[in-house]
Image (cartoon, rainbow, N blue to C red):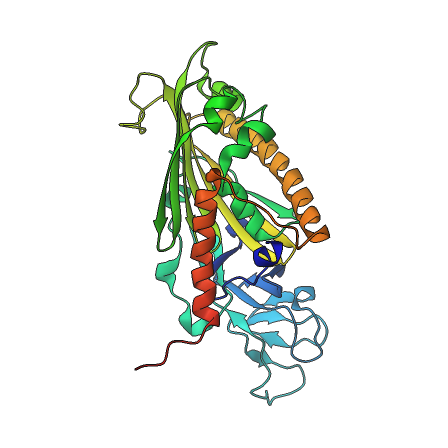
Length: 358
């Protein structure tokens, strides 16, 4: 099964390359989908992405500097514009047409820098994930994070699609409280053309420690808790989760004052077959006026996700050791299986020839 998990990823899709704040006035290098890229901002502040390899003597462009006109190679001074075209060769007036490097379509919006790694002419901004809460620091204050994880990116997506691990791995944060009630949550899974949506309900349960800290609930309170996730293939998961006191009609209306709720953005971009970049940000929806609440939420989620990383890296290592060993699914894997089908469709669309017209 691991051989299946390590198959290639779709190229004709948007992947998160960086948070906006990461790319400033210097070359910024990052490997994505086994490709070494360098990002930079031009004089107008627009972000560009180029292959991190000068066409002259293969020097990494990350060793250069941003200058007027583009990115200058640090070895012999060639300058490349945002489209990858060489616009200056020191001491040479004629610039051969082949003096260029590959460029990649880039879109920056909602604090995210997106890159299209496939055929540039197919880059479609309408396919970008829209996450408007990142534009609203007043009502949804948040802090950004990024992990580099030694695991295949499919495993991280799988981890977000089956939440029955939470009461076991995360006992001290989001998984504490009523373990049985969490495992036996009711779950509704809906396949979508772009991925899968699911929602889990845990009614009349003891809230976990993170929720108690956030909401300030007294001992003995019981809550109705929800976990709503949507996977947008190939690399994004958006989440809205929270709880209201039992009896407040959470199932009929989750958007009420009080209680505890947060939104979470997850961006998972492959680095190599065995490593990935995990971009995430928790958005404080329960006490947006409190910087302390936003900081505490981030700290709690960071601690929680570090627990996930330990398991994911160990899981990946075991799969590498025994790549042909079979794995089984349980009933809790319904969203996971549907998510895998969505990304399989994207890969097949790129790798299989179209059917001949009759």
